[in-house]
Image 1 (tube, rainbow over the protein chains, first blue to last red):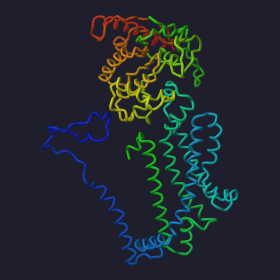
Image 2 (image 1 turned 30 degrees about the vertical axis):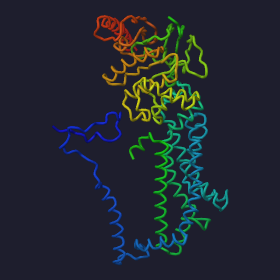
Image 3 (image 1 turned 135 degrees about the vertical axis):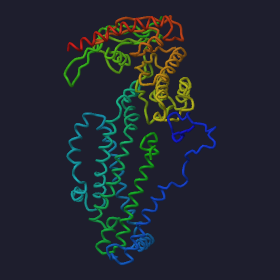
Image 4 (image 1 turned 180 degrees about the vertical axis):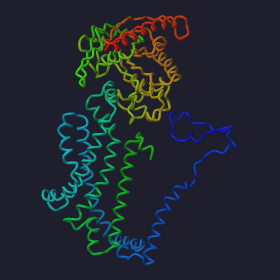
Length: 287
Length: 262
């Protein structure tokens, strides 16, 4: 007799279906592996690449000026961290990105909810969005410098606009794809229009809002780099650009890697937030 | 028998924007609801039984005629609540927060509304599942949550829009039995839309047979005196079934002939 129990684990419909494993002694049952092979490969892959990179440069086939060996990059990275250069640059970039992202996403969520909810507001806003959205937001930066001056506000506004549109469009999608029967059910249970907006439309759109936030975080990082190329002497983008101009290749690499780390951290943060705020969402349970 | 709601001369005409046509969904419906009865609205698809339910819920208005409830709503409390075929549970709310939704909208304090919700969760046999999300439940369990949610809002009348149509046959049987027991325990008025003759005979006290296009009340059959538990193989039930089948067949025949003519 064969007993297939490979599908019994996990959070299944019901949960009351928990199966007692009696009378199955002696059968070879699948079990959770202690150290999945996939994880091993995933750790080894970048390690091997780093080692190969180090070796290639050491053997002298590629000039260090184009591709500094990982260990020397690490040394510079540690030095820049210790003397405060890198933390300061990160902090300045974080302030600009954080403000732009925060205001942009709040504005995007609020406007998006109203646009999705009201046909009139959609008719007003939609053509404006359609006209502005295709413009690369970095192309607006010179204009914003003209309007808001050379300081941080023009950078923050550029990031804000970039984030705003992505969050806005995804929020509208979230409201529009909400099953209308949920709104009918809420009304049937006595909810006022205001309550429907706050207790049905907002939570219903939340998974899509998070899609917008994830995309927005990506664009915010791109825009902070672009805007820091001009009219500033602080921030990670500035440091990277300066490193290029002074031909400090290790320092360039250190900045690039830092950008990568910031990207990963922001993604993790948004994923964590989504897990906390929408525990029901299927995209969350699948992760 | 105490009258709880009177439907008088109710007509509903829909305007279909896409085609610019008018659809005559309901035609001069006269119907009374008695307190604590189990009323079945039975008819072929397209006879307007769901439309009638929608009018009863007050979320849509008749083109002419009127619906009058004897009770008046107070404290924003709804006189009716609907159980939908598609469950219509809020996926972001746990079972208990779904059930407590109605009281929450009336700003009942958290502890009080949870206590109330807990009572109905127990009534529909879902104790232990309070913190689950709907997508972690089976179809039958989701419909129990929907029923508990309607009950927890404490309406006079509960409207059912083919609530068991999407379930498998076994689950449907179990829920039919439980529905009857909950109805007799809570003494609420149930108005139940179905196109299943068996369901009508197993559940109903009165069966309102509707004809289609436009929807009219064709006949009202009183079967309150058939004892429970009922079975589709008992003599009396079989007789009623046969009669209903005849009516429905004539109706379907008529509408198909009309479709051919179009």
